[in-house]
Length: 93
Image (tube, rainbow, N blue to C red):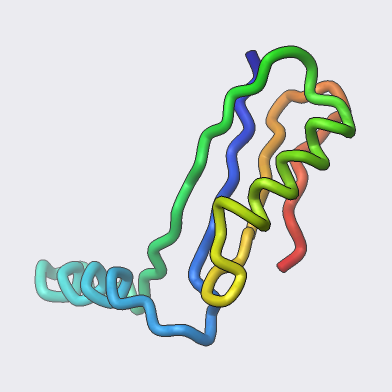
């Protein structure tokens, strides 16, 4: 069963309090080379059967309409892995 990975990140112009907290903790613990952190979400979706163009289209729709909040987040990547149609796809944000 193929696994498809969808990555969602906060829009760059919005504050990311969780990322800011992580960056602050890293700085306080001596990891001063880190200047910023953004925290996002990763979804792993398993599908039955081959990943054809219809499956790809449905996953794109799910990513845009359900997995992300388009007001504050961007779908930054959809990785179809070793799916039938070839290489990984990066969503245009």
